[in-house]
Length: 110
Image 1 (cartoon, one colour):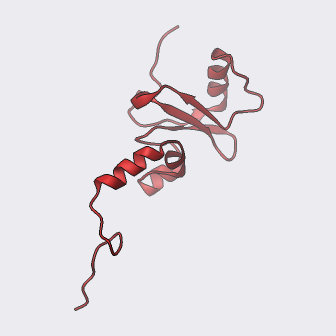
Image 2 (image 1 turned 90 degrees about the vertical axis):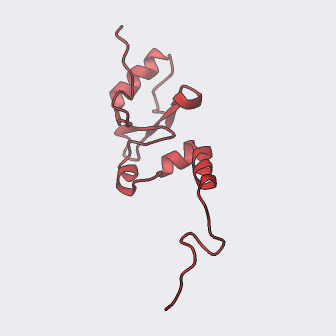
Image 3 (image 1 turned 180 degrees about the vertical axis):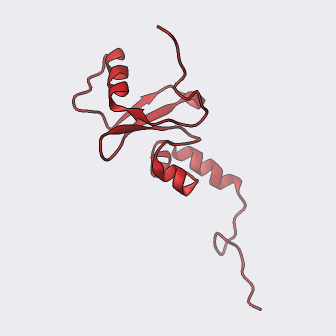
């Protein structure tokens, strides 16, 4: 068997249903019904495959990115990243300076 990395391009790639079913068969896990998510790895190499609402693909979610359309459109953490990697969002929030009056700081009226 030739070994390939799932995230060879550096950004997450959406996976087809048949590819995830083959992975589940290899892991000897039932694919009927399709699981809502499949976790693999741990630590910095952890990733989660999340079933789309249409149930036609699995989004690849990591702490640094997601292959869902919302992650690309909003240019930030999507709901999948927030759900499966909540500590990453907290670390990002803690590292930024904040203003007690709101996210954008004080506003002066001239």
